Length: 111
Length: 243
Ligand code: SF4
Image (cartoon, rainbow over the protein chains, first blue to last red):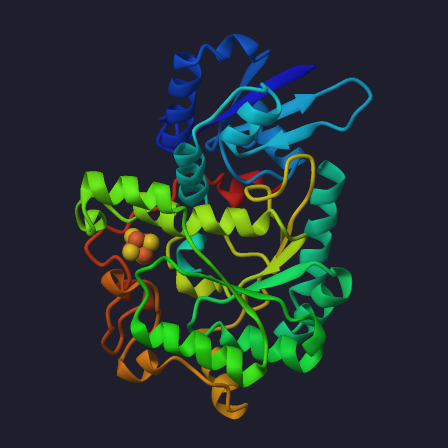
């Protein structure tokens, strides 16, 4: 299995807030060692490796994870807690999961 | 997952030109276990449309946060009676609400922002409900949230709420409709509506977080008005992700 993490660099050159947040969480939980490759999706450069992957898999959110298993189609995870639960098989806190969903989907405010 | 995503994207292109009724008809035809999310506001048009298309297949749920207006509870009941349908009213986890209220009081959203309360009172029960269905239909529209970069597609692969190793399809048949079109539909089809709309409420959510808006104000200004409008920043600019 190969896991690639794609982080976004914004137009002003800084790392996107959620990417920073996820990275901090992953470092605190010692999960970065489970990531095989980290790529940058640089909004200023459409040919940056992360932007190329985003196009290939039609992903419009960052960060995201590409999980490649032999003989299977690559799987894309844009929701961090799902990745942690389903790929890393680790526990997450429900309140963190729900907050992440709402942060990533502001359109849910109108339900 | 990838094949599925591409499929959904193709379908979105195809369905984008269709009317909300055609999109709902397609959704009801494709899925047996599909539910409409009804907020007790103008998204009642979804129920009306689905009921005209296939009354047998109308499955509706509403999220009762415990903080809705009395008018909204009355309206949900009116809709239930008017269409002769069951409405599954889903509630937040009592333990989680209890903990939040004990620690932070009943109006923590005015101080800490709405996200914590909304995630407990809305997103938690929504997720529980969505674990039981294969597809869902919402009344979300593009014109509801100015400044959000992410466009609302007509059909999407809902990764946030899908069961593990499974897919969940989300339909937003009103995505391309404006508020005016929704209201034209309500008037010309005599659809019942929430009485709060007659009192200047455009968007209706929970009582403490919703207020009437004046002429020229966007409906978003009637919700969480004390919070600074923040731009969602983790979308990848589509201009840069397109070839
Ligand atoms: S809209 Fe207000 S009261 Fe309702 S769940 Fe959100 S923060 Fe809580």
